[in-house]
Length: 155
Length: 155
Image 1 (tube, rainbow over the protein chains, first blue to last red):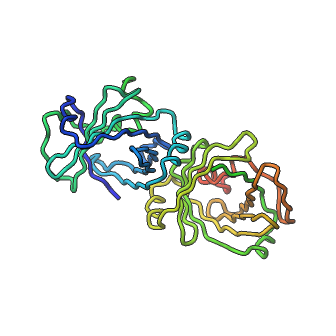
Image 2: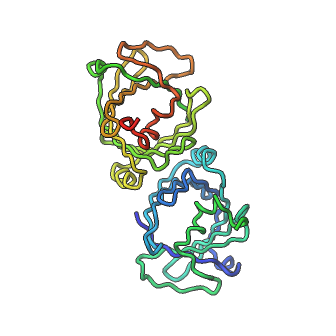
Image 3: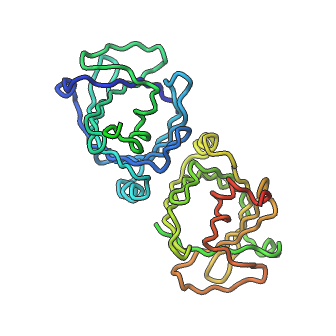
């Protein structure tokens, strides 16, 4: 129930030609408290409720618990969420044994592109593609929960 | 997904002899914001995640959505909840076509007993048992989410 992931800004749109999947994501938060966020997400034809805990000291690991729910339930729950619904396209890009999830944000976060990679351990190695920019792991401004309250266009 | 319920204080323990079921409940909140609470509850051998919206003007109806989860998942999620875990015994008492849920609180809410009845419509009639006290429907001090932050013994 704990995930280890590293997060990077993306320098160019070159990742798009390497992507093997693209999905529209709509999500909102019932709670954006950094110690316990509760997210509602519609991901293509599926929907999920996800609870995340506080990050570890180094920002690498975080408690995460997810439950699939019906899309119609998610639509009702999104109406209840805090203001600041996030819309983004998620691209999946293979990288040897790993997968990058690259999120291209729209609306109030237009212009922001973030790549995440999930690792097996905190010292797990991976290849850095040329489109990968500066690392922002642990920087809470880039948490989606924070982007919903303080969107990128207002920075 | 909207429930109509009325809530009353309880004057005596006489309801206990009428109860047909008693269950221990342990619950916490990931979020106690009155517009959108997220509750984790272990109810005997079952566990649930419940999202509730804001009450209507008259305090009678409220959006509610519930999902059963595993008890072990609930135990992990309770560790993440805000301080103020609530423990109580829930008694079920038949009342003609209705059922009273009577909660006897423990710990920081010791001494508080609340009865709730769920109704089919806002003008649905029901018999008032002799142990039923003053109505507190819509009084947010008696919401469990508020009792976890401002427990009865501190009033």
